[in-house]
Structure formats: C-alpha cells, structure tokens
Image 1: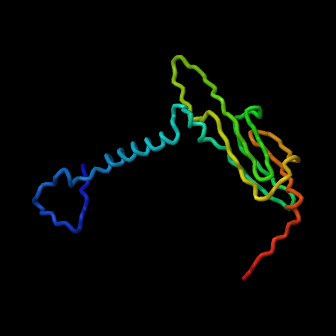
Image 2 (image 1 turned 90 degrees about the vertical axis):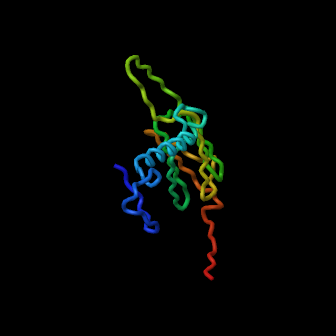
Image 3 (image 1 turned 180 degrees about the horizontal axis):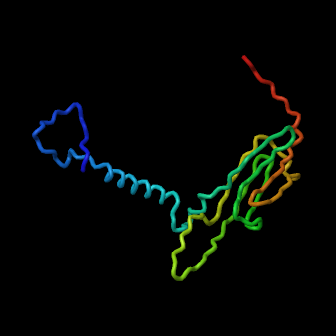
Length: 164
C-alpha cells in the first residue's frame, strides 16, 4: 500500500488514476536517508581501522577548582599507564597515547569489534596558571587523577568587577 501525499492547493479529479509521481513511499525514503547517513558516518569514523579511526577517541575530563588547587580527572579505560603520555604546562594539560589493537582469531566464528584503536591526543586549557613542577598524579581503574596546585600569583588574585 502506498500513501498519497496530500496537497491542499492542487485539485485532483476523483476519477483520475494516481500517477507514480504522486505516490509517496515513506519506507523507500527512509532507506535512502539511512544509506546517506551511513556514508557520512563512515567518512567521519571509518570502520576499517584507518588512520583517522584513532582520532575519534578522546579521553573525557572532569575539572574541579578550589581556592588553591585544580583537580583534573581523565577517563582512559582499557589503557596501561605505559601507553599514555601526560604533559603539564602552566596553562594546559596535554594527554596523548595509543590504544593498541588486540586481535583474537576465531576459526569457525566471526569477530566483530566496535572499539577504536590508534593514536589520540587532547589538550585541556586550564582556567588559571598552575605550578607544573608540583603536579601529583595517580592512575587507578582507568582514571588519571591530577592534582594541580595553582601558581602563587593566582591564589590571592583579586579582580575588580565593574557593575556599571
């Protein structure tokens, strides 16, 4: 059964048979839209593990600020500390690394993986300057905990607010 597109501004005689151009087949249009979206997502994140596949993964971060310290947590599940590089400047934290491919061969079955493998990098700008030589780090259960003490000039810094 085909649905007919209703056009209130066009008069159709009741006895005139419907032409193919007047039939609306929603499932065909949905199928076409799905194929187009799949092509777009394949370009953004190729399933073949191509060079850009690793760019999709970026560690998520959570930043908490107190009067004298910044606490930054980075989530890197499934990675070993030896595969991660964290660098801290007074203005930012940079994390990079590589998620290595673990292949398991099956003889009679099919293996499907939706994990992203490859290199990643993320730079997180900090809201205030920190003493990057006094950073403390802990890695536990796939989460990096960084304690970033604020720079002395930032601790007691008062900013005048103009109200008018």
